[in-house]
Image (cartoon, rainbow, N blue to C red; front, side, top):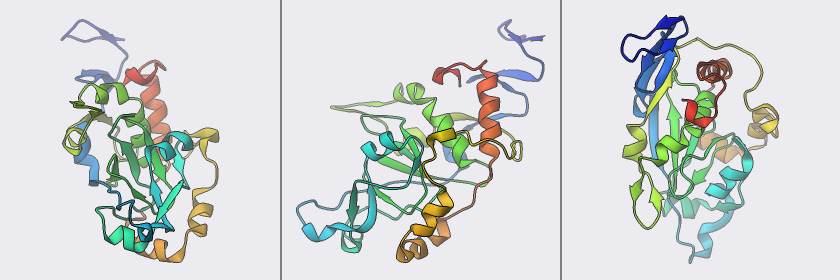
Amino acid sequence: MIMNSTNNEILPQGYRMTELGPLPEEWEVVRLGEVAEKMKAGGTPRRSVKEYWGGNIPFVLIEDMTSCNLYLSKTKETITEEGLNSSSAWLVPPNTILLSMYATIGETAINTIPVTTNQAILAIIPKDNFDTVFGAYILKYNDQRLIMQNIQSTQKNVNKGIVDNFKIPLPPRGAGGKGEDPGGDRRHKSPQKIDDETPVHLRTRAARGNRRRSAQGNRNWKSARRMGGGKTRRSL
């Protein structure tokens, strides 16, 4: 144990005090925007135009995210190519972090297939130094801190700017390794199996965004939980 000279807190050896609380010395505190290759919300085609709906392109709503537990492989609604092209919706590549910004703030999911989303959901494509699984969990367990930064309106919302500047802990690149899936039994199917079942036109269109992720988020997440002594979502 070592004494932190700033606030007289006793920290485990190898830890330091940061604005987010105690962190391993090699971890950083970064803005989410620093580790995201792209952040973009979706859009909803006009529901009054029936030609925009019922196609073969998955359309994610927040209720799809709250019911999938982590890996999102199907949606209740779908749109057509015409609906996609007539709205601000865009095709989100697999292995992207989906974050809810409206009402149910801080809900996260990882899409295993190409999807589109409504405007209440922000798609975050991580850079190579930010593991997708770790990112989804770190945002989920910091939802209360994110909610505190919401915009007061008729609904409690956050926006892309708030999420971009949201501070998170970041382990060093390559700190993780292979191990047990942090999602455990939350994974309903193998993401590879699901991707194999994805329609070819969607896989082709989203191919450039379909980035492989290592399993390092698993160990990083366990480190994060140990850092807080196994505490709940307010730990980080």
